[in-house]
Each structure stands twice: as structure tokens, then as C-alpha cells.
Length: 96
Image 1 (cartoon, rainbow, N blue to C red):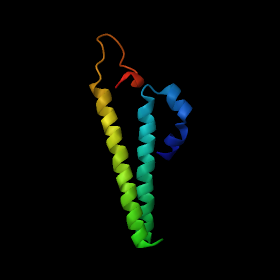
Image 2 (spheres, rainbow, N blue to C red; image 1 turned 180 degrees about the horizontal axis):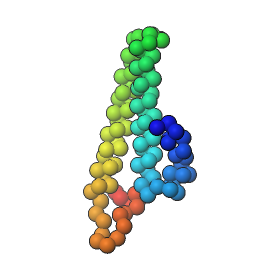
Image 3 (cartoon, rainbow, N blue to C red; image 1 turned 45 degrees about the vertical axis):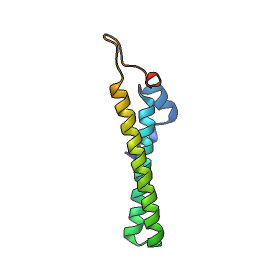
């Protein structure tokens, strides 16, 4: 996944993807989840203060959950957007 995300520059996302904002959100979700895993790995391996890591894990999990919820909400918003018959879907910036 990291290889894919390194190819997703802001410019490439904007020019190559129809719903570019979703791709940016997906990358943010992946970063948030990776942060959780990093703290969990440190906790399990005993590298660092357990109490501090517990707090960092909780905070990073909360951030990751918020990022996932925001992505789900945006996906639902896009899915509910009406596409006029015989036309292409609305651009992301046209969906409220």
C-alpha cells in the first residue's frame, strides 16, 4: 500500500482521479491507521513508557476512527448525489 500512496501526489490525484478528494481522504485514513499500528508495535515490543503509549494509542485510535467516519460520510454523500439521466456523475466539488 505504501508504494501506491507514494505515487499519489496532490497533483496526480487532482489530475488523474474523478473524485480526487476521496483519494486524499483515503491516504489520510491510511496514515492515521499506520500511526495507530506504530504505537501498538511499540507497546507490544516494550519500546517506551507503557502509560504514555496507552495514551498515544487511544489518541491515535480516536483520530483514525474520526478519519474513517469522515470518509464514510463523504462516500455516502457522493452515493446519494443524483446523476441526471444520460449524463456523467457530478464532479466532487458540485456535491454538497
